[in-house]
Length: 317
Image (cartoon, rainbow, N blue to C red):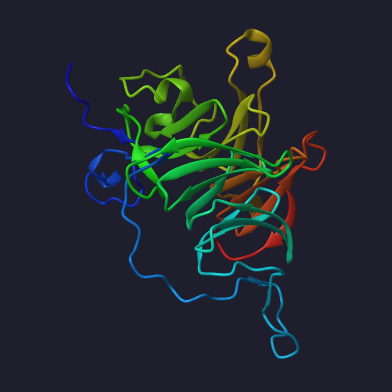
């Protein structure tokens, strides 16, 4: 079986070698697993610096400091910082701890008992974390139940790393992609939409798309975002339209899909139409925002009673 000309590769996004420029007709997509990798820690530690939270909305810099130091900061150099979806801050340190902060207040601390080289939250959880230490051990800790468990051990110190998981060969250039908890959605040239099962992608074997569709919009796909509940995805085009689609191929689910127009305005008696460059969902309310080449961010409600509410007029996105 021959290798297609266009491909999508899953791997480190920072690697330049092997990347494919869209101008050559190929699309490169890299997906990384948060897997541990062997790496010798740096021999020199940085001097301890205060852990400061900055307020970037403060315009009166002369009246008050830009940032404030958190309460109970780490006693040694900070090695990693991670924010949760709700804004909690997780900080690991050479002092052997991983500390959880809510604004400036420490809400919990876990002792790995050796310097912690890296840390992260477990998926969307704000109480379960992973730490990687100088003892070559990766641990899981639950702040709620105060329970810890060793999940991996290596021959050398174990910071978190990103490793190649799988390689996808796609029929055309990749324009956009999005991920839900169970699926990966890729939009390519030719208005094609490919849907993959993430469980299959983790098997390091050739994988075919679970579904391959043609966009319900007539013009080039610009952006795709998955719904927070994992039932489908929303797709935008260069023609100022948004389509709401569902993963379920059944007749009932497909009958519920719809599309609407936005990012348009009257200029000299003619309708000016602008591409929709980006979209984002609110994780709780279900509303979503669209950003277009007209420099406008629109808020769309879940019941569509306020289509294209212009909340911000800014520079072209």
